[in-house]
Length: 392
Image (tube, rainbow, N blue to C red):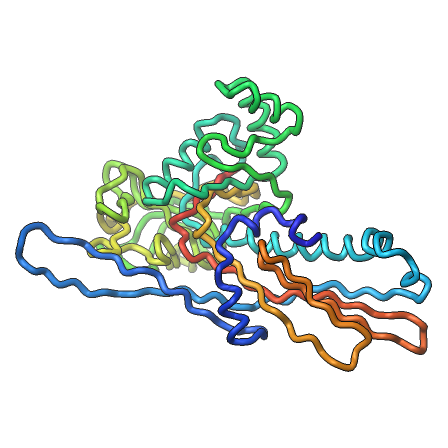
């Protein structure tokens, strides 16, 4: 029941469950996932040694979700099917939706975004551009998925009803009201747990305030004074395609011709003079890097370059996700089965990796049995460059 109610969770990397099983299961257990080194390469015969720098991201079991319910002896006398349908299924559906909701919250770590916030995508081009952006970030072509909101799904199904699709695809979309799985380079999924982003209040005419800034903090000025100008999860870029900080392909380090987008990692408040320091994250969790194997931009944002924000002030709208499997990781661990209770079960789905503990005790005073359903898990964005947000 639990796995059938999850849309996003089965689509991500789930290979780390066994690591947590070895280390034990408790809140706060951390597994550092190593990421491969990156190299520049050389031309010619002369030896040019490079540092082999491994990076890592922490995957932490930091969330314990559950549902607590109690049944009378009369309830327990029901058949298994009635008991499951009436009592267990609603609880498991709730837990599954909470897990998926947390997972889709990983969009906050994704820096690439295609589309116009406030406008529901109604053409194939938007989703083709999502694929293009993944290609520019050297993402693999295999295991690409797109997860969109109900409103986004309805709009694109209607728009592409007769769009050079095979008759079988058109028939399936018409019958189910859903995009066919293998379309425009993605497997498509609709999820009511797709998250929304509220854009910061912005204001003023923000610009980069100093030349040659690199790293994860960019100083800016020109904002409306003493205002929360940017929110966590806002996407920004610097300058124009003719003179700004452009993105580079991570393999050949050539310019993609598009402005490098960064995601804001915490809310930003301007001071009384309209000056603000903006914390940002880009490929590999890095900020502005102008050279070396982990280069992210063609150049540092020029002094006085315009700061471009995705979305108008205060706008709230959904953010779908186009991504490869390894963009995100999910792990779940086995919670201990305590002794001295009436019943203790562990149900584990080998395909999705979810492990739910069910414990039942007996209350002699009220002739009832309290049950608790618990799930311990963690989410991590391990390769943000393998995902792209779809604004709506």
